[in-house]
Structure formats: structure tokens, C-alpha cells
Amino acid sequence: MSSLAVTDLSILLVEPSATQLKIILGHLQDESVGHVIGVHTGRQALTALDKYRPDLMISSMYLPDMTVAELITIIRTTEKFQDLPFMLISSEAHRQALESIRQAGVVAILSKPFRHEDLQRALRATVEFLDPEEIDLHNYDVEALRVLLVDDSSMARRHITQVLQNIGIRQITTAVDGRKALEIYDNQGSSFDLIVTDYNMPNMDGRELTEFIRKDLGDTFTPILMVTSENDEARLDNIQQAGVSAIFDKPFDPQHVKEILFRVLED
Image 1 (cartoon, one colour):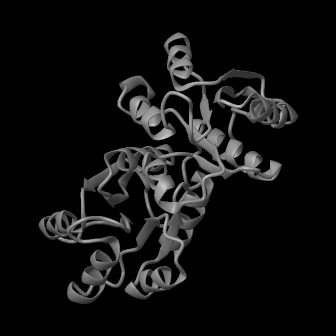
Image 2 (image 1 turned 90 degrees about the vertical axis):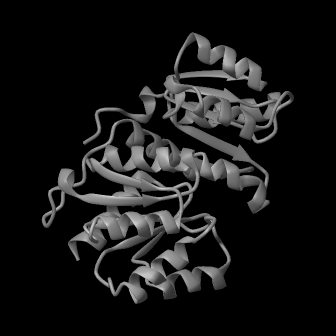
């Protein structure tokens, strides 16, 4: 059982609108979150980060002085904040506009207006990320589990690696696209227990990688998990047909990751 609780969280909230700031603060107070600092701009957020490190940063999409993509890039390229949990609250519905945020590794993206239960789930996901419990498998020694992680985004690779390490997985090999993954797969003699791959990648995407492993290489046993923000039903159906074992949405909940891993590895 996690020793950290939602009430223990320290949060930096970035919201230009005084009204929206008040609304979100009200939701956080309803969850008895103990310490919240509210600011209105990206620069104010960075100044606050110079003084203390919160457990979670929550931000609106569009800030007066920068976009949230610019803010999160600054944070992710600052070593001490690379693994800082980040939550987006936005009315933006365009998939393309949100893609860079998903790739940066966030604990949740909430739509405005959001439901209180969605915020509750996002806060629980933050606690699970900060104070995780290792997955308990009967058929595998978790620390000996060999994982091939494939994603063209360095920030996404870092975030997914952190999530996997948090649940006890230590042996993680990374690749920047499907072609590089096949080189590694071939050189290591198909020695992986699990493959986790992004869908949209240059050179060879996740569906093509899965099909090659399943059909050309004849590996129908190794579980393949697809990580994607895709919401087109036809494309998702094509991903399933390629032979993936499960599909994760971006951003994904650490508890959901453990549940899926338990299912595909223990089966």
C-alpha cells in the first residue's frame, strides 16, 4: 500500500484566468490537497520552480507568455525536473495540438470543463507514479524481465522507462523506431520478454513492427504492447489485427499499466 496520499501532494498550478484558477483550486481543496501555489504565466511557474520542487505541476494549454508545449520542453530538458509529473487541463480538442503534450509524458490530460472524478483519477495516478508499488508476477522475476521499448520521442521514452522502472522492471533496452528495434531484436536473438512500442514513428511504425515480428519472424508468443494517442476506430482495428497484445492510451495510468502487464505476462 502506498505511503503517500493525495492529501500529501504539493502542487504548482499555472492558469491565466483568475476564475478558472479559483475553480481548480476549489476542486483541489475538495480533495484536501495540502499545498497549492497558483500562478498565471509560464515565467512565474519557472520562477516558482527555482524556489521549490512540487510533487505535481498542473497547467492550462495557452499561457500569456508561452505555450504549455514550450513550458514542458523547458522543464523536461532541465535535469532535476525531467521526471516531474505534469497534468494538462485544457479546452483544446484538436488531436494534433495535444500530440506534443502526450509525447512529453504527462500523468493526465483533462478537458475543460472536467468532471471531479477525472481529477480524482489523475491525482491517484500521480501518487502511484511518485510512490509506486512493484508488480508481483508469479511466472517472472520482475527485475529479470527484459523489455524492448520503442518510441521516437526521447521525452516519451524517458517517461515510459520511469513508469516501468517504478513497478520494478530494470532491464529496458530502447530504440528510436521500428527498424532500429528490429536490428536490436535480431542481434539479441529474440531474447525479450516484452515489447512496448509507440504507434506513430518514422521509418517503421508500431503496426509495421508488430506485423514483421508476428509474420516475418514468426514470433507469436512475445507480448507486444502498443502505446498510442490514436482514436480513429479503423486505425485502432488495424493495430489490433497486426497482433498486439494490448493497447495503451497516452497518457497512461500506472495502475492500468500494472493490470495489463499482469494479464499479458501471467497468461
